[in-house]
Image 1: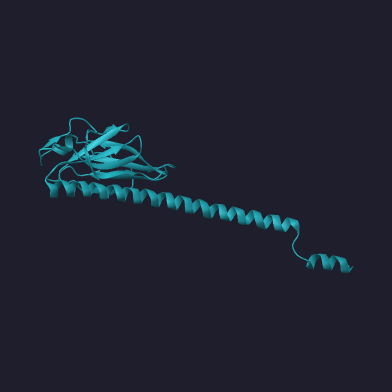
Image 2: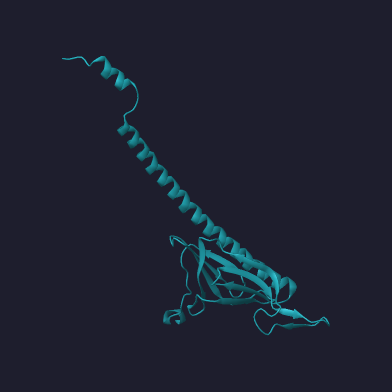
Length: 196
């Protein structure tokens, strides 16, 4: 057996080789990529849930304001600009009387100014009874003084389309209910009308 020379022993005890350093950097880089991807997915999901909660809160606000003021309040969804607001559709005249605005935007009073959805969250569409899909322009939903409203489902998604939320608004109570999937209205069939 031959003994390693003194110069070989010094080289090995002097630190890591270039190959070992490159492998370590690659392993750390791959690990950090997975960590950042996980954080990105988690934050996108959190942002979607927070947006759904904020919209549901606005729906509840519209219902409560309509009941407490004994006036109609309108929730307006702007699907083009990805935002929503609450408006009071009446115009007060100089003599103190009020009248219903005759066209959209005609001096309507904002009760709740435009709320923009976060950049990574968007309205997928608004679903009306009969599964009529509205996915362009603006949709106006009235809340009456007794708290009722037009039945509708708001579908929200994140830009990666990995998660979706639906908010169904009950037409009689105006209360919002969450679903962590794409919800549609259930259609009646013959069996629903069978008397036993």
